[in-house]
Amino acid sequence: MHTRSGFSLFVGITLAGLYGLACAGGGESSEARSDYESASAAVVQIIARDSSGEEVWIGSGTFIDASGLILTNAHVVDERDDEYVDLAVAITASTDLPPELSFLAEIVAIDYELDLAVIAIVSNLDGEAVDDRFPIVPIGDSDGLEIGDDLRIIGYPAIGGETITLTEGATSGFLPETGIEGRAWIKTDAAVLAGSSGGLALHDGLLVGLPSIVGSGAESDEVIDCDLIFDTNGDELIDEGDTCLPTGGFLNGLRPINLALPLIEAAQSGTEYISPY
Image (cartoon, rainbow, N blue to C red; front, side):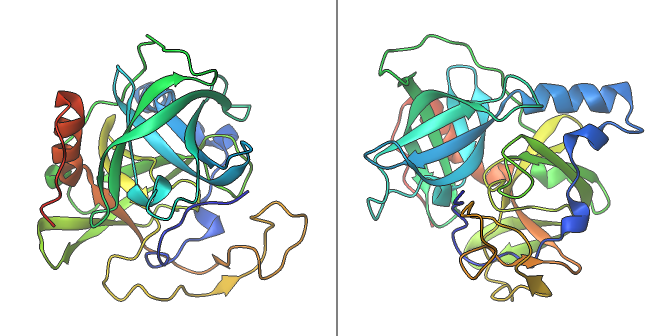
């Protein structure tokens, strides 16, 4: 399995933070479980495919409009080098099973500087139009987050199988970025693994950010305590072709949802999005 990881890991990831869904519910309140169940129904796997229908890479995304608009990272759907032919979308029917390929999608708004994109469902796998209404995650206010606020990361990591996966952590801080006003990154100690990039960060049942394993430009060129310990590319070998997985401490980066609002508004209105960056 290949993932589209873009640039460098933000600061690192750790296997210690990866929970299976089987243990995600232990000790949860019924409200927290309900928030997770509602959100997980709206998180999809995005597969970039070649002309033979084979996977080129995968990522995650979240329905943010019932008509079929999906928010994700730009590097998950990057078409600049013509490396893929189409974008397939897989939906989870049961958290015990891998997602099922169900739809085709196209890019409707993209910002490579912010590493954000919105894609839209355009047909089923046979090219037939669909009129489905999709489950969504309500959008929160990332500027309202405070250090210590809890975060839940939901996506489809390459490690641990293809099933939808939850990791948990806290808001660890914030980072600026040259040219971006306000919060450019949310720091978290929640694990963000390759494949989960483009998924969602949830707080109080609201979408507040996108997990992204790309560098913020802030001393993030190298990962720490990195080992080849898992067959991440699915070739039945553990070698230099696999992703090097950090095993020490970590901080990961989330793009705040507020930075995505102009793309979402353009996609919903059908107008062209032009990046100000």
